[in-house]
Length: 322
Image (cartoon, rainbow, N blue to C red; front, side, top):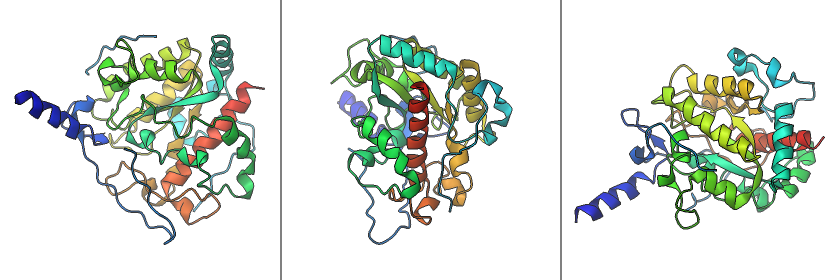
């Protein structure tokens, strides 16, 4: 009987997204979030929420546009000034080398994976680009090529992205989906094997804020694993500052410079939105449909997230192929 109670308790915990500050960062301590209904046009409908082995040493508005000016290479950027880094980066020489090595290893040049928590797992993130449920607007028409190129990746529910995931979770075989993953695989290594991607959107950090001292070591293991497999990591800063001193984003920026990798500065993309693009809980993003030509809609964080993610993917994909 006790076994059934324990199993039921774990299932309840896994329905949440962000962990409690009083608990361990292990995804076994997930708290159910409250999602505020956003204010959008009456015609909009809120979508339903969709139902290499590594060793881990830790416990288990404004319409965004691609800047046209020449940006400095990432090695010239100062990690201390990460808040002023562009939303859409230049492609680094290291990224080009990783990409080419990945192709030599048989990776698909037109596939990417998502690594993150519930807001990366959700079909709200990028899936509309495979259902035509979006409006690019005239100035974003250049993105039709990248949308077409990566069909099959946008709507995929990654086994390396789940509610409550932190950096340690991605590296733990305990959290791998045993319906599709092998016994010795982590969520990260499983997703790489299943997709054979050339790129990875790494959107972690919100569930690492309670024990940030453990974040860097796990994040390094994720980057090392991706690079070893010939997958270009695209590092994303997070919108929230639950930890109070931006230490997670500072760590991401510092490692980006050290590893010479491109950064999607999502924090900058939403910082001037109402409440920084965050709901009342200070973590979850404000929602609206993907109508990128509507300034009112673009005052919400979700369409900004989808558009800027697409812009970054296009920039990195184009850059490594030139």
